[in-house]
Length: 407
Image (cartoon, rainbow, N blue to C red; front, side, top):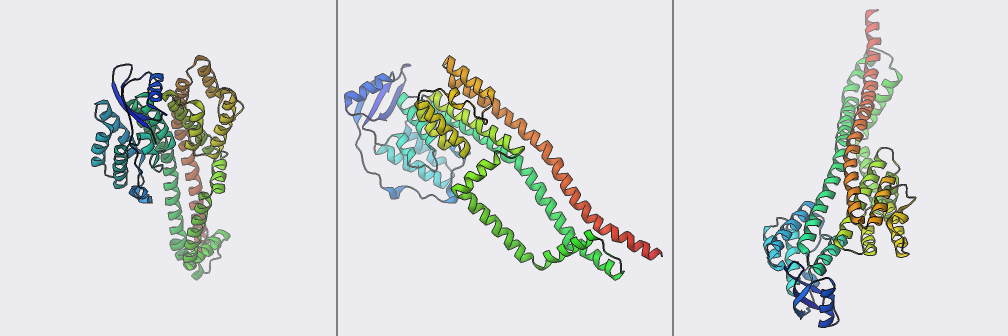
């Protein structure tokens, strides 16, 4: 909990307010002067204990969407730029939110602010809504008096990440629809159409080819044991999801997907873009490199890249640069390594990481388009082969029946 709240002016003469930890009023003044802020008034905050039951309960249906969080950042930034106080801005925003859970979170944040909490400490009480990355950037904005700019940066970063995720998910939708539709058509033919023809062939004493017998037996099995099949498929899906929800299962899947052909390079490029963008945002906001890497490890939802960041953190503690720490990592291409190296030499690592993120986000778009070029014909060929085999199992005995009738 912060000890002092302050009113001050930055280098441009703009009035800023905030809170900070300090041992004494004199210490608070020194801390503000170190970040080039001229204090006008410094007062010790009155701390009250917030009751935990006031916090809204988290449920699966009350999660905050990225788009809602983006709009929240944009609106709050605009109001702060217009000179509206933080508490007033939160009051106005809470009345406009449609998400009941998010509305209650914002109202609780406003109450905590009135009790002396800093904005960043208030955000930290809701980790299901605001990530550590979000909280730490806001804390930097409080200390430097650039809250509105930090919130704009957060909104831009959230929008870019959501756009990238939507493109990646969009690439998976078409193959999924194609697979479901094709499977439905094949099951319809096998279970309803094929048995009708087989009945006719048997009455005509036409010998059934191997494929016809195979598909007919499969049809009878599906029609007789459909309940057990559905239960088995549902149970398998449940067990797989349960397995992937465990740490071992999640780590196994995240490691395996990077090794898959076509999908592996795409996922790797997405993670490289997220690594560069997130780290660039934090470094440009003034977050120290070690703290930024510590946050980045939790932001990257992939065990392989989290391990890389952990190794980079350990190397950075020994005084090594990013380029040296990432050297030899197959997940990071040479062009990214070179850009980081140039950034370290020129003192513009954040800018270079942003450039690398721009490039790889564009690369992901082209990779998704290229992936669709491969997936579509592959699925069509597989489904075509399946339908062709089923049609052949119907047509071959039909030809034999026609020959028998002609004789």
